[in-house]
Amino acid sequence: RMYLQVIKGVDVQESRIAFVLAVGDATASLRKAMKGYGSIPAPPTQAIANVLLQGWKRWELLETEMRLSLDSGDKSFDTLSKIMTFSKAADTYLNSAVEQYVLSSLAAQPDLASVIWGVSQRQTSLLQRMLVEILFLRMGIDVDTNQAGFQQSVAAFELSHWELLKGRESSAQAAGSFLPDLDFAGTSNACALDAMLDVMGKFSTLKTSMQEVMA
Image (tube, rainbow, N blue to C red; front, side, top):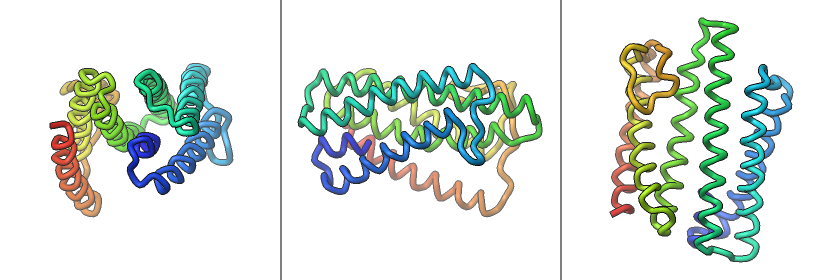
């Protein structure tokens, strides 16, 4: 997202600094996930390690293309299309790794609230994905795909929010759910309920703004 803000000329200096910091944080975090670091264990299974490796390879391609584009000022259709492809591929692999981590943790300790954690973490990823899809759409890059992807991301975010609020029964699966075969209880903590109400209010405002951008 920071990359796209730079090439669109939105708060260029601040966005470029944010881009450099975000890339550094993402690279460091992915390395820690792949190798283990401090309290972060190395991947517990070879399958997870393999998925993380594939995600790392796509991340390297994405980072390289973004840096080259910013350094050269290349905003061509072909370059932006490659960046979009690498971005979506990295996102797919890393989300797959999260799913496998959740399943692995539940196999070891079935009572852990791993599914709730996974659903909650994916909300942040969905927000980032929506903004990227909107930006690519506005730039005329693969318009139909990004428009459909945006609608799917919004629907998945709203579905997950209500699942976190009310709980989920595995028998009541819905398209877009994170690990839909696994159920969990709804939220009962008063502070968490207040926070979730605030989140949905702010998301509704954001959704309206994004839809206006699409129009």
